[in-house]
Image (cartoon, rainbow, N blue to C red; front, side, top):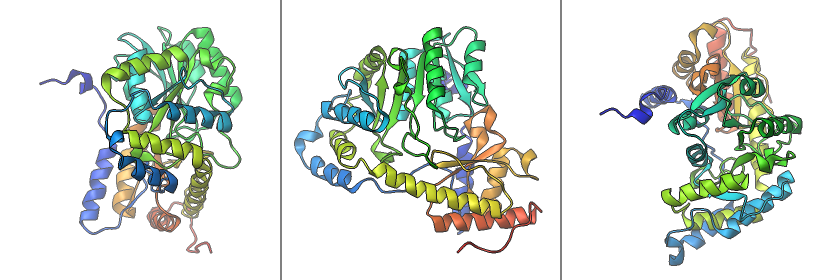
Length: 394
């Protein structure tokens, strides 16, 4: 049987590295996994306690509302007002989603039909590239993040433009001025601007990521995906939101009413508590990632691998060092796993523009990250890259 909707999807190259990692671990080797961006930091204790309490109540075992509990939608609007200076109506501007990834995929079903164009940066998080195709749309790649140029060159003109700042995997960050230019362009060219704000609260060195919805006129043309996954370290809870332009939110809510009954109600209740009673938790999570970032960057520098520190996300986007640059990102990632016992994500898995890089995820503690950089240093030193010192930081 031919599965036509998924037939032309690219192979999931991350599985190749994961298979080698599992094979090496089966052999007894200690592979440090900095590949999959799966947060290891615990969820807020107050939310866990509330989840347990709510789960014990039989009334919460029934179907919930796919749009999200009214208090949940109100709580995320409160979060937006306090954290991003954006005023939203919980009855018009918000629908809860089963994580931002599900929200984006179903949002594309609402916005795109066969023949419609979506402009997407390349490299990008895989669902950004795949979701428009699953909806029948045509993807136009914006290489090097030049969204404005790609929009102006696209033919036919785009119906949707997907952006994400801080960006996974490149870690590129945005200014309010860039967000305003994108909103102005969306209003002028009459497309829907979709901003994946997954790393809204994970930024370093004084950078404060702006919400697209803070730009003038954004509610006329933009929607934003927000999630508790990274900010509150609640990855497995699958609690996300689509916020913004009212008719788009309503259309997504209508589609979801046919597809699901929303996230398990105790999770929604616990998420209300997280938003209202653990508002400082994202800053604690961010500080942990910043320390891990600094540990990884300094360790790579000692290894002779110069990498620019990211201003946001829980990742480091690293150009493949000489003399391995010609190998491509998949082969180099396999080499790191096999010869340095460090698993990373190959850049090619994020689209055509990613093959010259690998992505490190900051999902291990600082001691494990130091161990990883020591192993990388031995590999690179053996290949005569740089002249690293054997000294370790105190």
